[in-house]
Image 1 (cartoon, rainbow, N blue to C red):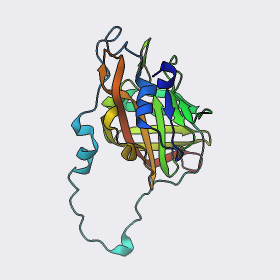
Image 2: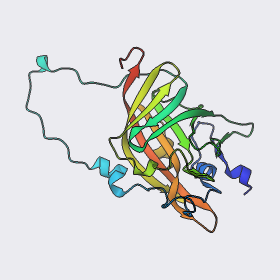
Image 3: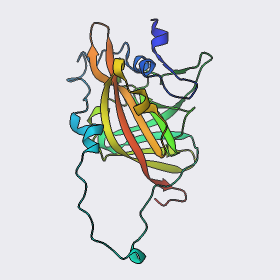
Image 4: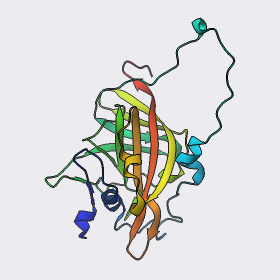
Length: 239
């Protein structure tokens, strides 16, 4: 396959990113970090404790004593946000603070990857849900480039419960809580789990990982962060 084709993301008619094309778009031809030429170690990869299964089997809290229904306060629920262009993604736990660029389709129905030469830049798929809307929003970025670690170099170290903030052009910051972090081989990528539609506002943050093939000079798959909207800050929501 030609390099220019490898560096694109393919979008289906339903607006779902093709996993194999995504892996190629972000993870081909970058060997600086994986070969340890300029950095002491490869990017961190998630452990089983960070995965979806671990989150699903976490012990449930002890049952609360029965209360008078008339005195129970309503549960906090995340806000319902409308569409708005995201402008910046911030992940304090791994020191990410990066502008977002829209990733649009070309005439062949493919989505270009974020520019590789900018180490601190991520992209979002503008044909799907915007972060904070009901549905699955997708943010993607490189793990490294020929200069060294890039925007999502430490994505695999993110832990469940961490916060991901996405600033939007409407003055609102959508605040997401991480549910799980998984590494997937490109040959067995779970498209529906990662990109399937959701009944609430969810976010996927994606980069390359899952090991590195030095012979073919590419990562073997992707690291995926699963998160859901838990609050909002800014205009109309307080600070």
